[in-house]
Length: 380
Image (tube, rainbow, N blue to C red; front, side):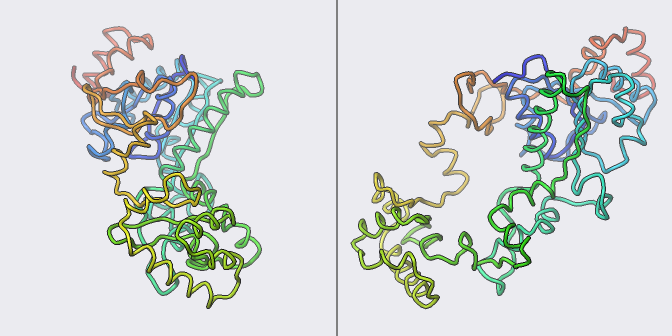
């Protein structure tokens, strides 16, 4: 699984676009990160690792020289990724049509909070706004009586980056197969979060209103839930009857088996209370050990720090702590043509590759010096 030879100009910031282009980088693509001179990413050191192995160019796109230099780079690229508010790239003179004039085969991907059209297209926002509109935030509580909870991860941001990477690979493949001659892609982070609603969308589309704590996967069934252990928390996900039977047999409560089919709210409430009492008898780790080898769909709830040190996660090989760069969570895929040990680990300095990439694009020393003097690129 290699994208060797694919060149991507990445104008995106913060998490969504950089995450998507990091996935492409982990699959072998060359990512050229276009940055404002003297202005590193606002994302901060926490997200430094999603710029691993990317080449970095500092250009002031508001200056004619910076815009022209970008278009020169675009003639050498396969893909452009941008994450400005709708209309900004057109005002800067680096939109899809501008790039298409110099490179008709370009795949151009725009990521934005709400997409390029619709009444919210010009609104500013962050992940919390997007998952709020997408219906996800409403479903993070146990019941309507509780306030929604902020998710532990940025769901829309990550989903947008993931769908962006998927759409880019698809568009490049279509181009290489001769089906298209370049393509424009519009990715909405909100749409990505809405797409994740497959478990509740059918009911919502049928004019029902799925409520938190009342759907099969948000608390209606006691055999699919989170329980407090003597120490920590345990997950029980025995949706299928054979998992529930294995669970009941293991804990010596065979009389519970027939309750898996119950539609009686009172019976479900009583069973939930009995499960609470049961799980409080042991710690999380004791329950995990107890169910080792038993197909009952029981697991533990772990902190992020525990997760990255967990033997199962370590065995997969994508969590890395390299000597030449920040620790990171890499490409979550394994295969006959994937080698996690060969993934890029170092993060280049801000604008470090500006001059070398402009030379590769055909600019000579005089032209590069002129760009420096105009302020379009930083001093060497």
